[in-house]
Length: 69
Image (tube, rainbow, N blue to C red; front, side, top):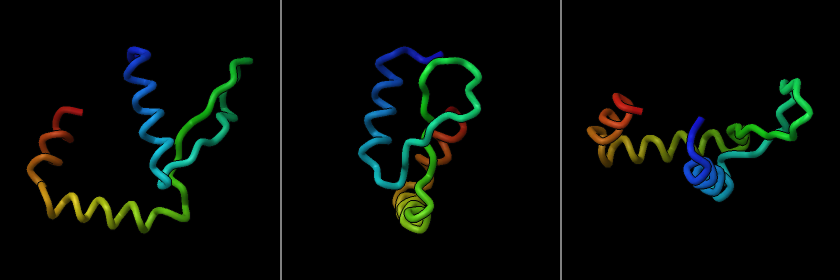
């Protein structure tokens, strides 16, 4: 698993972005409390617009980041 600092950073950034929402992890068989992040269905169009904007801005950077996630 990832280091705690990295996980907290991802959670923080997802919580600030209205395109994502926290959903209860119903598949978890353990007694631990947990949540997953999902795209907010009401914000999918906004997310697609943002991705197109970044694609026009720096397609090379997107390709490089996808090659080494």
